[in-house]
Image (cartoon, rainbow, N blue to C red):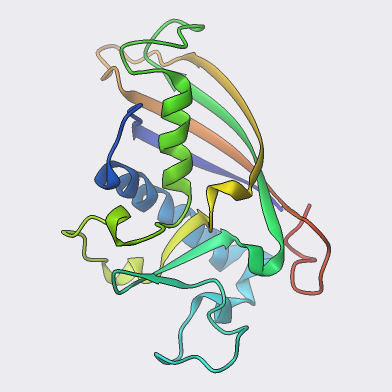
Length: 191
């Protein structure tokens, strides 16, 4: 499965739970639309829907994780033996090749991004002030864990917007979902 996510906003090199969660929330509508429209996902609503508080069948709601009383639904999940490869095109408001800049070094910006692409690991990664809207239940994420990223390619160029904030970026993230092994459950998802 191949698809593209986009993000436009701040991507600081050092961040807290609120910054990462804000990025996660901005990516949520795209991932929710993917689950709604992709042929391999549209018929799998049971993986991200909870019929009751106590699920009996292990395949129902298998992709959901409850953190601080809220459901998170990552797509790339070890339950179906999936992993992801990312091809990232990053526009930053500085000259190309400025790997270390006012916005911070690119490796720490990528760490912030990777943390935002995955579901929170515990309640410390969810801002206590956040209350999901009806549209954010569950909150869709790309990854169960950022360890499921096995390949990353990054290209940077200059963001040509006059007066752009130095921490502002525009990202195009091409995602390839692959499987560690083919199973009946993941056959439509892997590429």
